[in-house]
Length: 129
Image 1 (cartoon, rainbow, N blue to C red):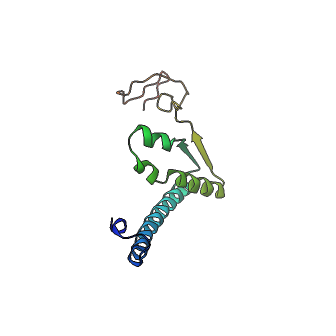
Image 2 (spheres, helix red, strand yellow):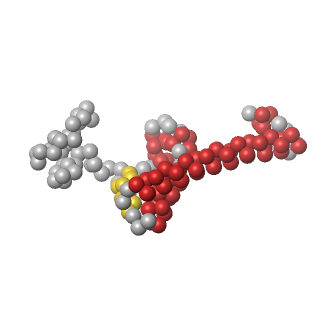
Image 3 (cartoon, one colour):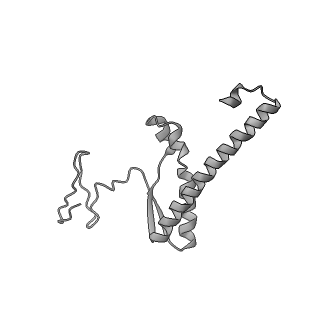
């Protein structure tokens, strides 16, 4: 806000612009550091990581999240995770956003329609989740 009140091109404007740039750089570095730590933890803990292929642009427009969806660095996180897993010879699997993971039995692979209100999955093979 202070920068917007300064006359563009003046010495005080330039000084304030540098302050704003430093703050934005610090925020970007904090986000990058956090994403590196999280991706390293996942890569060292698991042999395979399965993520959903999300449409972040669509989410920001349709769900009225706006900038907060773009601000979380999902693309950067998936990039970090993929190269760290590749270095260790592990696997990153991207699943389509319409894959019925909650309707599919993890034991036999049978698919069963479920309402959103249902919280317990019971399969015909006897598996309960």
